[in-house]
Image 1 (cartoon, rainbow, N blue to C red):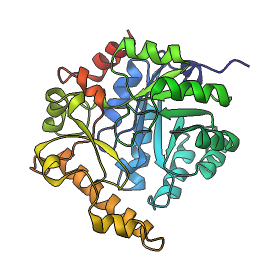
Image 2: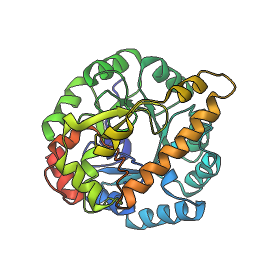
Image 3: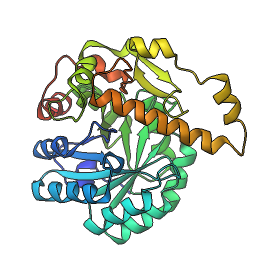
Length: 316
């Protein structure tokens, strides 16, 4: 049976999701994306309270246009203590779709489907893809080794083809897209569409500082490094002087504690909180402690532009 297209799954005009990015994504970005005929997604954790989360959904509902779609990203593991309440709000307000990350999506899939909401799951390998397929996911977000943030280990062509050959779910590719030729390449590998993040950091509408946006213009693919300093899991960041100074590897103490079965989850949680605070500070104010998350696709970012212009570069 033929797999659905991304445009038919989300009732959009172009096969693109503006990916959820911590602190970067906001309602302005998604609204401009919907006006351009694509989907947009925001991390639920971008909102401190459930009231703020609900208000953002109501704003997007009011602004929704034909050919556009909106969703939210949920971190579904124990590090997100707000997860169950966030899920309840998303289901209550009936958002168009949910993207799950970093944990089992079983509870999310069951609750979302009862509310008529589609669920797409971040995966980096076949084993987890088959697991979420068995749980009833609607599509896979194939996070490859060119993605920004927490990326996967596998090149896009190999990952897309493996998932298509061994699962019955449609595959949305995440990572390595900043131009129309990149999009066409992913579609030729068998993806039904793409989830794109880093090129949208340097948009007028994104929620970060002008310094962060300008860094995405000034730096390129060769300036992206993997750091373990944010969450303990390798994450791509711009190799600023501060990142060079503090290094990208965990200290021997962190490594030792991370091997202890009893302490491991607490060490990871503390590291996640500390790393998130560092990213938050760098994203929203000028500081010498610059930890700017981005992927190698900032190579093609030449200027700070509106979301609509970036969508056109990728899809037209």
